[in-house]
Image: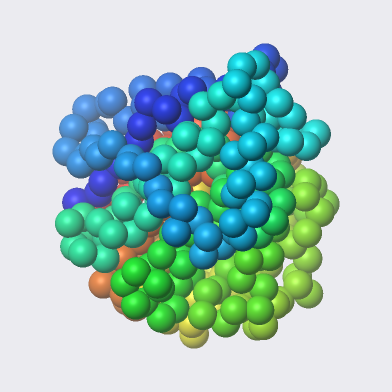
Length: 308
Ligand code: ZN
């Protein structure tokens, strides 16, 4: 497989303050993991700056302006209780969008078979008009819309295995049957959404898990709910919101997954992509706050993307 990694030094310059879990060191952990021998054939690309046009497909202009004007000239500024911005945050977020849309371009043009975007800030909590949960722009949603608007794809599936529910992605596609959003997440947990009966236009599949659940419950949610829905939906592109905070070491949640579960889920989604859309798959990093868990999970995930 030709797997492309999108990254950029600016992602480590989005500062969030001492003690914040969504911290620059996360990028160092991912980069170090992907320096290993196994990744010598990984195709590495620098993330371009994303376009405002791409962002406006998911967030209104006045929201984007509000985010831009919130950025401080120095120091830190709080957007909400847990979302912090600093001087380079807007530029970092723009490159995160650029990486996500470039990954879609790369996969659809056939320049690469699949792609992994190692960016921060993450995106799946960002609603149309609300930055929250460490997120400014919803990279996965923007990638899906880009695939439809710039490449004419019909149906896009977003599968989100971050331990938190992607309320932002659900918000953006709530009444849009052309995008399927499937999520496994711990519930109850931040942000509080993601119940089974939140189904949108029939295009939202929430499979909440309970604190303490591990591999069996996670895989059963995939087998019994998510994979059948994806099979019926028959996507033209598969996007993964790949958060690794459902790992048992993660400090923010209590699911008991291991890197082997992320490897397994990656293989399952690659199989769906092979069957429905010539393997087109774009994976975007979301959460993951224990640096060791983040490193070993990224290793398992990207290795699977490369080997199929
Ligand atoms: Zn998360």
